[in-house]
Amino acid sequence: MTNAKSIAEHWGPGDVFGSIIAALAKMSKPLEGLRIEDLAPVDHFHARGFPATVELADKLPINSGQRILDIGCGLGGPARYMADRFRCRVNGIDITPAFVDAANKLTGLLRMQAQVEIIHGDGHQLPYPDEFFDGAYTQHVTMNVADRPKFFGEAYRVLKPGAFFALTEHGLGPRAEPRHPVPWSADGSSAFLVTPAETRALLENAGFRDVVVESTGPKYLAGYKAMIERAEKGALPALGLHLLMGETALQKMRNAARNIEEGRTHPVQVVCRKRG
Ligand SMILES: C[S@@+](CC[C@H](N)C(=O)[O-])C[C@H]1O[C@@H](n2cnc3c(N)ncnc32)[C@H](O)[C@@H]1O
Image (cartoon, rainbow, N blue to C red; front, side, top):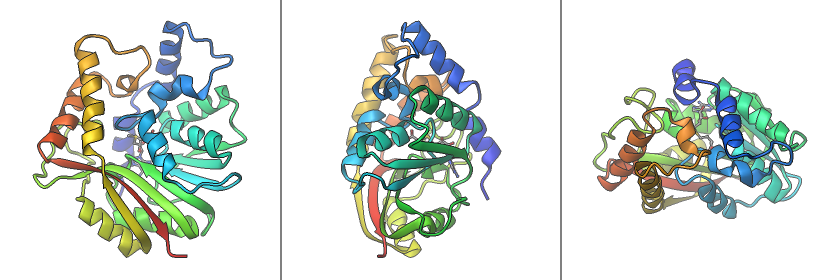
């Protein structure tokens, strides 16, 4: 079902935590007293980074003390932001061991272990009881999800009745056939994009209701273009998402932007809720 090994090798091939620590040292940033905002340039690993997490959070009905799930949490930046902003508890799960390792070390540096717990695992098979969470989100993960009925079914199972589910993704555009490499795939392998209409239908088939789909392409495009411009001038900061995208980072960003412009992808943000 999931080619976990190749997905993990794609996302986290090396010492992710070490490269973040090296970048902080280059910036003369002491680890003692590190704040959530200091890590934001690198630990929100999706198009537009931190501002996109804030905009998603603005749409989520999270209350203090609730338990929220982040599926494919990456380095845990969004999980720590949600925990801090809403005074909630966040469980994160991710298929890439190097990200889980880095996520937990970063959570430790920020002394947030009481609020944020991150484990290694696959969103197709969640190790949590039924009706356990007050809400769940998955940002830029589903591009690698081979079996969406199973993945959405698992999210549905672990949510309490009426709880929200949100996702952001690069959906498939009308022209299809995305150019590669892109941030989520070097050559099209382990890439399973579907159109926004298909995502809506899959969520509804899983039982979700009140599905609101918002196109995010123009905003993503502006974000990619700003990063590409900085990279071309050799002006990327020491700490940034390029650290996580390897030697082909610039090519991946250029293709991600062109895919949107050419209608090959159609990025969306989706919010819905479990039948209550
Ligand atoms: C673009 S990163 C996004 C990370 C995080 N959601 C964020 O926005 O900062 C995609 C993440 O999805 C994870 N992933 C992909 N397929 C997964 C699966 N089936 N189960 C859990 N995590 C998965 C990858 O390991 C990677 O960390």
